[in-house]
Image (cartoon, rainbow, N blue to C red; front, side, top):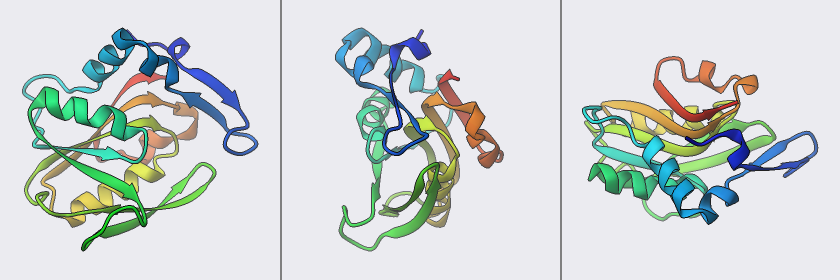
Length: 168
């Protein structure tokens, strides 16, 4: 079982006042990485037709979860990283804002599980949910590696199913 001790921390990164939780130790250890991917994968019988991986660190885990579930994968990217007719949303995050994009192809009627590394304020997750719903997703749920409860992200996602591997 992963714990907070499996992350390295860096104070004042990327800006003063932020404590950054680094997933590097998990990625360097194949057993920890395998455990993280397993813990991010919902239980059998949970309806999931598509995984949405969030730029950038969600991309590391999302393909493995999709492969474990034998479902497709879509990417949520930062603006300017993908071509095509995209949906966009602005996410308020703990140290600023970010514009996100999503290609809506193949999402209508799908039960989508969003995989990301950290749930902090919930701003990114809310923006992703908004785009997925606009794309016609039947349902949206979330799986996070780390949840920082002091920042209230779960409250921002009250209407969604949310699971977190490590809760701090």
